Length: 445
Image (tube, rainbow, N blue to C red; front, side, top):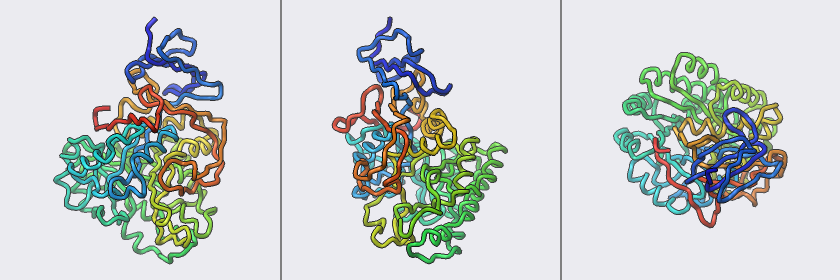
């Protein structure tokens, strides 16, 4: 019998084939054996999961705003990766904006890596940024290991990360296509939003009308047209409007290399129940009506949406203007990195879906998007990244018990199903006092 560094036995485990009893052997931080639960694997350490626990692959979140350096009072690598681990997330990919400097050249990437060094409880990769004037930096960033490039089609909310015009988008996509890169796009149309009514104040309905579904539909069409002409791989970020789905379905049917994500908050909340001045719910694009939410669920189940990621976009409590409740002026971003898994499991379970579905949406799908071949699966050769999950245990979200830096979240007081009991990174339990996360580069994991 071969001895492993670690053997994990689980009456329930989720693989690409569904849920089954498994015995997983780990050697040198990677999964070296996946066998039936009663297989006679031996290990230097043997862990038997409790009867109410399920072994999941560590989740992959490819849409996280860590904000360090420059806006570390909003969030930072220490707090963000600790929150990720507490939520069963073992890999994050950091967005290029809200940090200062933004990740728009190789020097800024190195600055960010230095800021993160020694602080990461989970593995971390980085997106590059595409902004006016930096087209000559994209290839260098690609070669330095970023997973792709993020751009906006309207004001990003921070002046150091301006948007691309439609003409610039096509020019940049042609450059990205020349070296096989990926462009990820915040797809809202600036003109549609400029033409929408902007009343300000505390009524969520007024804010919703200021970010109409047509803004997403028009921007998605802009992206698809540019992708057709350039052949570039493109990805639509945080889809909130189901109105854009027919165009995306048609584009995929014709073979365009386009993918799309949504987020737990678009699948958990609805505009009708957001109260006066509840700016903790503000995000862009916005949370829409309940009927729209159900259409997003239908698209996710059908495979028309590729993955679910957090878009964890925190700020200080002051910037959310909770005391004023003005949706127009408050920072737009939802903090949910730690609670995405129970939020999604609660919604999926209520709709008759399984944990295997959730793993496909939150682990396999994001890993595939970023080309992380050794992440997001319980399979031989993959990193031994595990989430031990108790799906039948419930809890009420207390912001004071969350690990991200500022205790603000729209999930406060919400009852959710599913508790993360432990998280393992490359065969070792995650320990905030001894962080052993690594930096990931495109093509190497």
